[in-house]
Picture 1 (cartoon, rainbow, N blue to C red):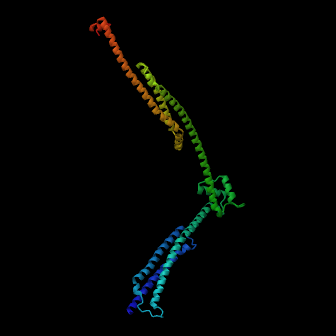
Picture 2 (picture 1 turned 45 degrees about the vertical axis):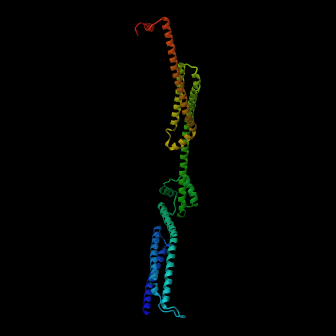
Picture 3 (picture 1 turned 180 degrees about the vertical axis):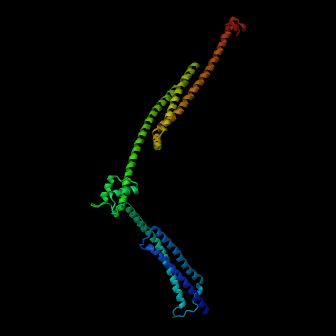
Length: 393
């Protein structure tokens, strides 16, 4: 029993050392976080560096606290007081020491976690505060850079130099007058540091106003050029429309010429049909030429556009020439139909000519045989009747 009690006391002493180290780690963590919570003159880089130190110290504090809890988990049963509990008597010194150590461990844990949470929350505020300080220092340095007469005020000349040096902008006289009226109190010699940020804002606004004016002029000029190009294109579309009208008329005439061909074929001779077919084909040829010319004129409408306006002009052309394209699309099948009808008519004429030639041949043979019979010609006599020049051929 005595050996067990001594062993338990030794373990409690080891735990006490671990807890003391954990408390020291927690104290270092709190010290690391102090600059973030105070109004220290830290830069943004300083804040980041302190925050990293806090995170590192937090890891160490957690590791030392965990070492305490791990020790208790592993050696806890060995640290129990082997002496029996006596009713009415206070707990033994060993039990009281162990209870105090557990309380200190819990306090370390709460303190460390609280310090880490607070540091993370205050970091963003510290960064903003440091950034504002850095920005103020930067503005002060810029102010002093152009405050060449060291009077703590920027004159008109110095403001103009500021605008050129920092904004690459020449302040117009009327803009400078407006700035002076709003920024400089009556009787003052220039703009003070307190109003320096507003001065920068007003210079930036004046620069953007001038840029807006230039952009507006460029936009209006561009719109004017585009409108002129669009008007020219509209005139070309109108001219193409006249050409399409002529082509449409030519195709209509061709259709009128081929429509009655089938009815005429019955009463016409082959030679007359061939002559009419030639006339109709010439009309169709003229119609095709007119359609081809219209097609070429429409195709050239989209050529030579200014690259700056090509997309807009193409869109305008597509909308305005849509009906022309529809009409041109209908002419091709119409011409195909007239060509087919004319070809059929010509084929009929060729067949009729063959039939007429066969009939003429039969009639001629009848006449020859009749004359041969009444004149009593033999083969030689019949030949001699046709061989008028007597050359035997």
